[in-house]
Length: 322
Image 1 (cartoon, rainbow, N blue to C red):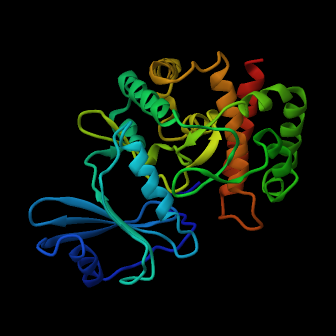
Image 2 (image 1 turned 90 degrees about the vertical axis):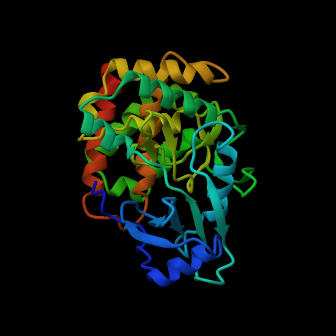
């Protein structure tokens, strides 16, 4: 899957507009650099620097996919538990521009994917810290899977997680993967129904998009989690499975030691330990996540084939583990 595919168009703002938005934060600030941050699929982001050396991120939310209030609330919650950017301003009045926007701290560092690829390794200490931080985020629990409101309270329930696989495979998602992969999924679920039920046994505050590009590694090797716009209530295994999904550039650096370090870090702060089969449960949870991503009539070129390959790889891994 290409990193350049966007779900929503990038919103191009003039420098004058960016300066006006920042004037509402600090009229004395003199902006010396504005640079679009083109990676990402939904929001439109800009790096902004002032003459005093302060650096910010301006985050613009799509008009028809505005999760600004939810993300601002999630940042406010998470700052008590782990490293997140400081939020300076959130505005959804749409008076200055026809979009909600957020101004937050720019975190110096590199994405986890770039860090691992650039260093040719995934340090156990870093995996431990990421696991520990995720466990802290997961301390808030919910009774079901569903959307959250701006107070991070359940506002709309989803279909029970254990039932979602079959609904997705019988829906649009099932048409975008190979028929053999679809049948292999059904067969695995028939033989391992208890695994799906076990995944759905506990729900927590999920980051929602816990991938390598949404984790910034600072120069001091501290992980900082960003982009909470899709946070919701999900099984504890949802974030973990998405985190350990195969990534071609760095998968060779994720070995048993990395997985063990993550588990030890998570266990150090979790309310209760993960079960012995936590890794397998997380990978099976991610099959549902991948199917959700393509559960629509039209998907970007290449997505179906890439996710089909990943689902096949996951099923093989689960079957080999018995």
